[in-house]
Length: 265
Image (cartoon, rainbow, N blue to C red; front, side, top):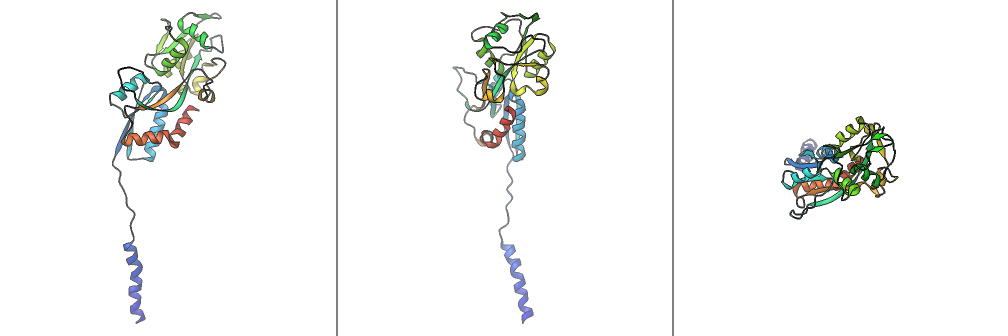
């Protein structure tokens, strides 16, 4: 009798195991987010996209980098879901974009080592970029600027030049990297670039000039002590939905902001 009773007792654990709930594997549908970014935000958006894809392997993030005006136009033409912009165009005939500030950027004034001054101010810069000062201490000065539509130019022109026009002898460059390269190899050159795109290796080859006795350090940009700074915007044509909303919430949250802070500090 004892031997026969062992059989059902041995089967009980097996029956219990077979009835236990099994973990469900949910397969997410593939999704994508289209991002367009001002060139100053280029490395940052690449880092954000890579981190987002790493934690969400079912999502593909497509990135395109342009100047800020072209990035906004691309967004408005529905060729992107979200944009990282270094300024917002204000027009009377277009609907305002949904936007959130996600960080700050500085505009660093850089000069060739041959430039015979190691600091400047807003009035001094205005005279140089208007062409009123073309020589200093025996050095011929060369103003180097960004193209129309660049966020850095928008901020520089608005803060430094105001209502005045740029000198017709200014050299126009189509990217931050091109400005740095031209200033590095041109005697007497002075220009401006986004601090987000000014690498330590670049700073070793040019002078980064204090403006109004203040260097563009992260702390001085953050508290407004440095006079040439701008907010950075995450924008969409309307309030984001779907995967674009998920990305926006993630970027504005702790994980995304940690990456933004790494890039801006």
